[in-house]
Length: 276
Image 1 (tube, rainbow, N blue to C red):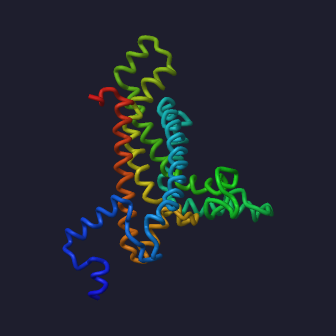
Image 2 (image 1 turned 90 degrees about the vertical axis):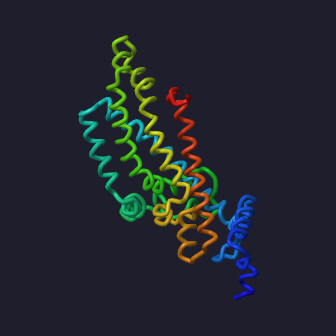
Image 3 (image 1 turned 45 degrees about the vertical axis):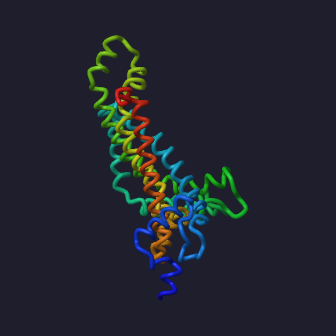
């Protein structure tokens, strides 16, 4: 026991241990995994890269659709389209990602292949690429389509409702009525004056949730067997790999703070009043 304590420097004061760890972490040395006996700094890049790809495409799709659906519902308030998108948004928000992921596998991948006797499914349900494939190609799209869909369904529902509410508040403002009274074209009023100001609270929600995604999409990655940060965290937690869990927490915290900073910078661009 004493030999182990000396090897791992546990016989030193806690302050000294923390100083040694912090100095190593700053240099990129996050310790060794007790699960694989590999340096954690060697294990993280591939896991992070897989999660980053999924988070990027998921956020891009969710932001684009949520923005346009929210704006449409606001400018067509109480229309058939507004009621339809509202109902679909509430269904999406209430739908657990793990359940939707399993349904998408059954009805969009496994089911059609069995029903129509196809040799290959339209979408794949495991990993990021087939063996021998790499890069951005059709194989990559077929692998990521269902994970991205699973990741975005709740975000699209909640973000579109948030954007709709924010847009309605902006469109009832005095400066919007003034712009209309001056004869400014309706499209310019909506997109230049309405949408830009309605984006300020929307950016806050998106930035906070996007930053958290880089810590790992545990449910999505588990269902589709994607070796990302979520799988890295689950495997480390199950094996009691403390060093790996600490490294995961550092990366998660870093990206949450980074995207908060990005949100603050975007405020100044969207609303000049925030620059002062």
